Image 1 (cartoon, rainbow, N blue to C red):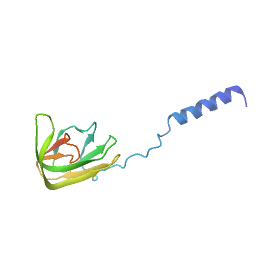
Image 2 (cartoon, rainbow, N blue to C red):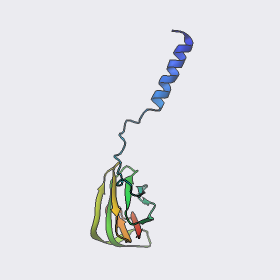
Image 3 (cartoon, rainbow, N blue to C red):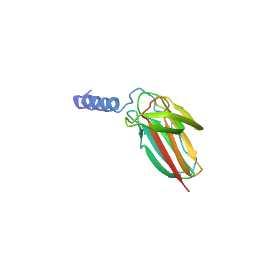
Image 4 (cartoon, rainbow, N blue to C red):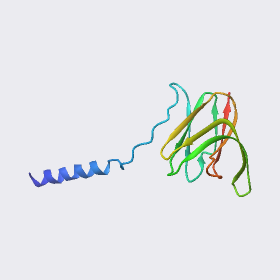
Length: 133
C-alpha cells in the first residue's frame, strides 16, 4: 500500500471512531400524538427547566431526564419556604410519574388550568404548567 493510502485510511478510521457513540443507548423518546403540539421540560442540576411553562389545551408536555438520577412528576399543592425547599406536599392524584435515569415521560394537558407539580424525591424541584384554551 502506498503511504498516502495508509494515511488516508488512518484518517478515515480516526474520524469514524471520534464520531462513534459513547456506548450508552439513547433514551427512549416520548412522542406526542400525531399532529399535536408539544413542549419540553428537562431535569437539570436538581431542577425542572423551564420551571414554569404555558401551553395551549391539547399540548403534550415531555419531561426528559438529563441528569444522572431519577425523579418524579407529581401534581399537587405545596408551599416553598424562604430556603427554596418545598414542604406540605398534598398530591392530587392527577399525575404521579416516575422518571428513571435517561428516561422520558409525557402527559397531554386537555383541560385549561394551572397544574403545579414537584419531584417527590428532591425538595427543591418544583414546576408549573399553565394550560390556556
